[in-house]
Picture 1: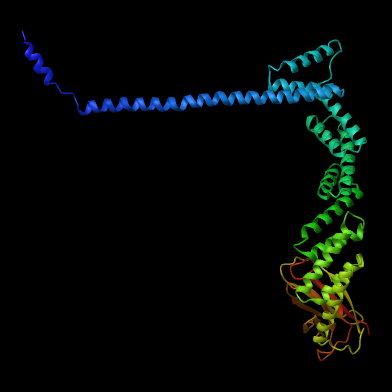
Picture 2: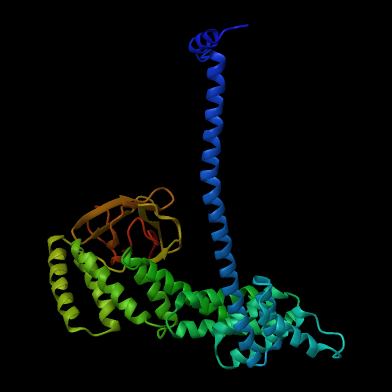
Length: 419
């Protein structure tokens, strides 16, 4: 039998097992504990977050149910039971426990008992939308009428297809005219385009759409290319002088293009633009500006010796502006022929402008000539010269060169000898 001293000695001699295997178990225990703590720290807040999010969603759905329920009551008050029923059904879809909507649906269902086979719901709603659209169109409430008809086509595209298309076409057209009258040109264009998508054979609607396009293209060029703006507005003004504010826009475009020409010392071009503006609206300040530009224009002409015409009107000319693309450079080209139409070879042709001396070339074997021009705009004077290549034998053909990057930069001037 072992003594108490033995146990005491053995206990005092005991030391914990700190072998590698023991370390592994301790590390594993700590890791599991850490994972558990982290998981709880994530799961508890996320669970609470899910609960809060669910409650918020329920509240939002309940609010949506109330909105649709109230819309349904409004439709009932206006005697549109089919639309009201649809709104009540949507309310229940948002909140199945929303008793007021369920009660209304039960009331409406009871009213249908004994009424025979009901009309399909989509047809009832479509007819209601069509009736509403007719009433709104009669009141010239074009936007609301269009909305109803577009809703109808989305709900039931086959419902009274021809009748709906005809009404929608007329609504688009009238709505486009109303938008145009109120200055909403982009909206007018969209409605005319929509009308043409239904029926593209109406020339009047197409013309109104084209007018809207010209106006919008002119507005897009405002501040960017005054020359293009003036061209677009001028084309529209010639066709429809009372179109919205096209007269004022054209006046402004001519003035701004004239100011730009004046900054570039193209005084004669500036005078032309100011004259075009003053032909639209008399303006005392602009008239003074035009007078100053004219003085400088005359000085520029005097500074550039103008060749003396020895025998004017020996040649007649015809000018054609082509629609070839403009990529920064343009040209004046053409042919020279005798009185019976045969090509004339070796004839001197020239052009000059404000501050630009006479530039010449000779026709080739086919009687053709060409001058390559740059990006600067201006009024160019083209003439036929005598055998010395210096003195003109024709009156000058004035060419409005728009610049090498603008539409109309390729100009043809054909000449034919008159005697």
